[in-house]
Each structure stands twice: as structure tokens, then as C-alpha cells.
Amino acid sequence: MARRPPGRNATSPWPFVGMAGMACAFFLYAVSGPAGAPWWAAVLLMLLWAALLFVATAWWTLHPTWVPAVAAAAMVVWVLVMVAGGQLLGWQLQSP
Image 1 (cartoon, rainbow, N blue to C red):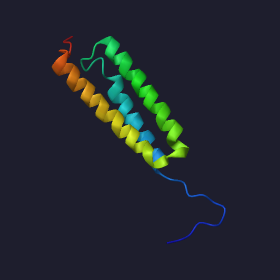
Image 2 (cartoon, rainbow, N blue to C red; image 1 turned 90 degrees about the vertical axis):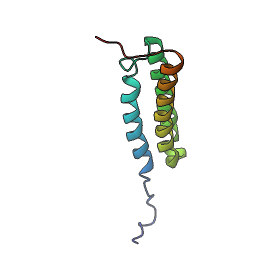
Image 3 (cartoon, one colour; image 1 turned 180 degrees about the vertical axis):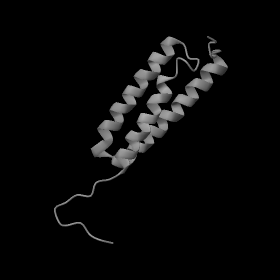
């Protein structure tokens, strides 16, 4: 394997993977309202996504390999909230 010249740091690809995952998670969170969540739940979910994006950004340099885990956790939390809301609170799609 080729070695990098002295003085150059290797750039980890994991923060980029994690931020791509956060972009994918954004679309899930953005569609929460049309997917059946009430407006207040959709707003809370978007605030949660913004907080997770802040964590992912803060960990970009400190813990680059943890950023994809934040994106995966964001997606899992969205699925759990939407399923729990549908089962326990009766959230359902609104017909046009």
C-alpha cells in the first residue's frame, strides 16, 4: 500500500458518508407531515433533525467514524416515532 508523504493527514471518508445519510434522513423528517404526523409532531421532528445535524457537524473532526451512526440513529428514530404515533396516537394519512 502506498504511503502518504510526511506531513499530510489522511482524510477519513466517514464524515462524508454520515452527512450524506443526514441528507437522506432530512427527506424522511420533511415528509413527516404529509406522512400522517400532525403539524406539531412534524415541527418537533424537524427540530430533532436539526439537533442531530448539529451533533454530526460537531463530531466531523472529533469523531469522524461516529457521524454515520448519527445518521442511522436519525432514521431509526424517525421510523420508531412514526410507527408509535400511528399505533398509539392514531396518526394516519390525510386524504386530499
